[in-house]
Structures are given as C-alpha cells and as structure tokens.
Image (spheres, rainbow, N blue to C red):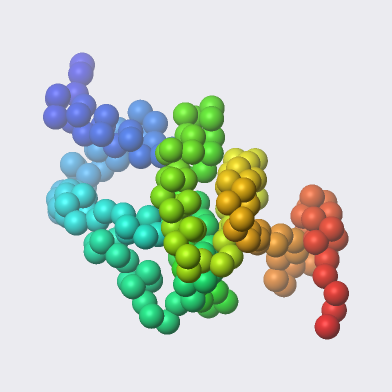
Length: 199
C-alpha cells in the first residue's frame, strides 16, 4: 500500500535536509501530521516567510533581511580587518568570543570538487571584490581545519596574495582548559609547531 500523494511529496521535500534519509523523512512527516499539526503549520509559515525576506548581505554574503547586514553597517567595526569563514554559524561563533572587531566574508561553503563545489559556488569573485576595496588591509582565513577547509584556505590565500594582499590564518592547537594527556597527537603536534614566544 502506498502513502497518499501529498504525504509522499512531504516525505520527498523533507529529504532535502542534510542527513535525512527516506526513513527519517517518513518518521518526521508522520509526526508532523499525526502529533503536531500546529507545529507543522508554524514550520510551513516560518519557512515561507524566511524564503520571502532572507537573502544575502551585499558585502559579507551572510544571511540578512537587509541588503547590508547590521554587522557590515556598524560604524563600530574595524573595516581594515576581513575574516573569511565558511558558514554563518562560524561567524556567530567568532562573534561570541568578543575577541574580533573586524568585518567578515561568508563563503557559504568550502571547496569540494567531488561534490561539485568550486570557486564560483563559494563566491570567490565577490570576496576578491570586497578584499580589494581599498579599505581592507588584512584578510584572516578562519576556515575549518578539515581537508576541504585547508584546501579552501590555501586556494583563497594564493588568490589574495597574488593581488598583493596581506593574508593570515587562525592558529590551531590545544583547546582552552584542555589537558595534554587528552589531546590527540595531530593537535598536539600542531600546537608545538605553532608555539610563540612568551612575553
């Protein structure tokens, strides 16, 4: 016996979410229709509204309801520093540290040729334009320390340095409060290589 066509369409739509396979999508659809129709309606309305009003900031490429997001519009930010991150979640994490007062550029992904994600898909043309605006003096690469994140940082740094721009990369090493005996050997080796003088 097959599910009604509308239910099948809902299941298929839910499968667009990352990590959601056919069984998970079916469970979600059953839950929304059987146990939480109010929640399902709220989800539908919120998704419809977000699709109508959320786009990308013209300067930093993060999600925004305005053409220029509040961070880029703020006069309290240091326009000479531009931090490049993979996703808006990375931007939010850096903002929580309150250790950085510059501006951002969000790639909305990372280079991954096997997944069909190249320079165009991560908006490198937009980043180059932003980095060469005559205000930015240093670009800080804060992509993840994964294979794809490292490849993206290397590719972006080569592009920017070829244009005479100063490029730096966030450090890596021991986590705050971490104990050496509990840290993996790769992280510990990197911490040793990136040591600095005590002042």
